[in-house]
Length: 315
Ligand code: BTN
Image (cartoon, rainbow, N blue to C red):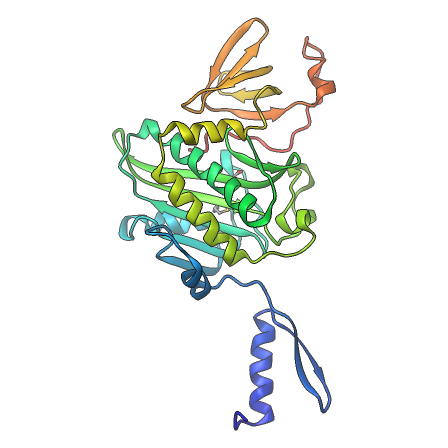
């Protein structure tokens, strides 16, 4: 029907296989498509994305050192809302100069945001993004993710997503922010360092998901949340999704280690910690949730805290 030779068909089949399509072959019967790969596809994203400005310029790369690094290098010369995605990262960056493992199958994405705001308000971007990603995961997949302070996303106490914001500013005005999202989607969490206590969407659901469709939903929710930034609604959602509120935690910050109960989360993202008889206000630090048994020993005994991840404001 196509008027091409068997050799030409074979060549195309080989090219599809290289791109991850699983195609079985049977003598005299022909080829059969067994499994389509879940590849990032700019055309698919463009056709299903319903945003006004976020992700309208989406660039997909096969392998990069870090999408945040690429985004930072492009930020001056591209429009606000540009999105950089990669199939894999070789030097993915995590918070506090940690590395971020980024095997194929995950969503490794950086957003370039040029927003008019004082530098002191950039925590609102982090809040809006964390809330938006939780909502997108919930509405698209029916999975409930919570927020570990300041904004790691966990499902059943296992990390599903990390957020790393890097900014450039003039005196006290934001120039641009690059928000990097590392979301374990179809990648196997057993390939990640065990101490990270990670999970993935596929592991939670028992099947792979369409990353492109989820990326569209995430970008749509982020655009809506960014437009509501600074409003009480975003703070309330962020607070209500918190897994850290009322927990016993250990916070490591420049001022040293503090342990106690998280009594509240303030509107500016600060954690209010009751440590001994004193209440402390912590804006940035490394947070470890302590297990109930460990928390009971908070009177000074050495603690073997379960440490799955640390976080600061990620700026
Ligand atoms: C964390 O430490 O929890 C934050 C991890 C952020 C990882 C993402 S993956 C996409 C983007 N590019 C990077 O190099 N890092 C962020």
